[in-house]
Image 1 (spheres, rainbow, N blue to C red):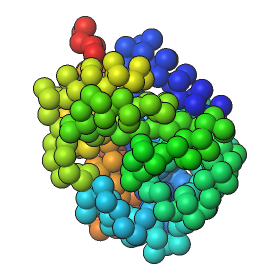
Image 2 (cartoon, helix red, strand yellow; image 1 turned 90 degrees about the vertical axis):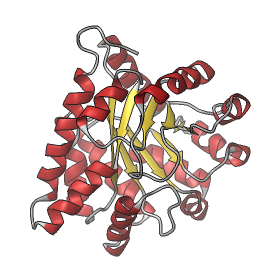
Image 3 (spheres, rainbow, N blue to C red; image 1 turned 60 degrees about the vertical axis):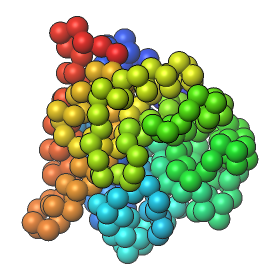
Image 4 (tube, one colour; image 1 turned 60 degrees about the horizontal axis):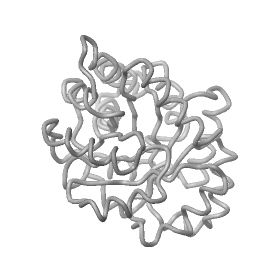
Length: 277
């Protein structure tokens, strides 16, 4: 189903005047078994789209919280093949929730772009975000994904001007990920007043749903962004919940569910009473 699963998700949410809640976790953090249990628990906690980061030793977009999660996953033996296996096992029990992978180009080149696209589609993945693949170099990746009906989800930022935005979104599908702040994940807070015109500009240029990520850690901030965007992406707050649970010798699955549930409720209630995008 691939891109169709993302399209169906956004269409259903638009019909309910709700933004999507997109939850990011690092696949394999803190280990493969626990990570799978977490991912399986997310839809029940109100998550509309699951975003799985594949751990990389030299991430350029992640702040310290997600860097440490990647280190835990790598130390536990997680690989790109393991991420695809995790997605495949999730898909065995959930045929509806879209799954998007997020990571870096080097592991994909090592795997082979055509081989990765085929393996990802077979695992039930719906789309891919590649942080360090500029649009000028994205042709081979876009071709490989398109041949398997996988979405190439592109990134736009506050510094993306109109000519650049047209280039960034030229091969985009699924949705556009708007990075609301300059810097790494978890470093700053998103400002809804600044995000609103940016979302409108990206939406007009791409004709795709726009999900906003980076700088969204609390239910209150998530609700503010959900009122103006098509989706809200939260990562560091969920990954931090895992880290906190480990430090407190608590069950990380229940801690992630608790955190995701509060965020999902805020996102889904944000437009009640007539607010909207």
